[in-house]
Length: 154
Image (cartoon, rainbow, N blue to C red; front, top):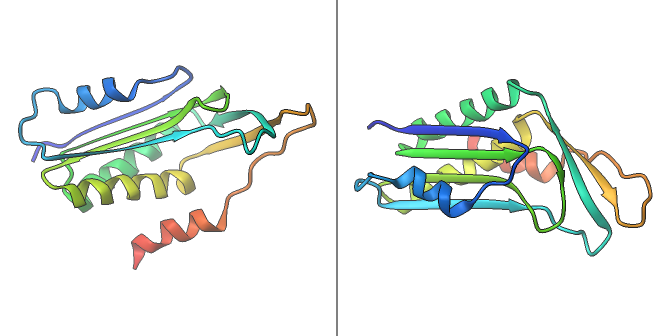
């Protein structure tokens, strides 16, 4: 199987349909495509924006490592992961994961695996910008994200 992995970390937005089309173009062997699109939410009106920073070069390498592991583990035919950085406002795209496989379960598992490890292993930092103008906080890692990642080692 000739699996393709595409990873991008970018300031600009991306388009889900275009990414799926690029991943599947000319591939009649793909039977399932799963997408995960992460959006910036407004936290019940209290958030004006998120500011995402990353470690250039290392973020791409770590996401690539995660995607390649998912391809091997779930026998995926392709995987795409795109993560944005910079100022992102509520409703805007943050992250996209697309996985392809002959059958649906592998594509679902691969997408979940990539997101669970991306959230905990890729070097990104998020700072909140509050709607009321108060100083925002850097967002701490969540125990639930670690637990989601750890379920894959069982």
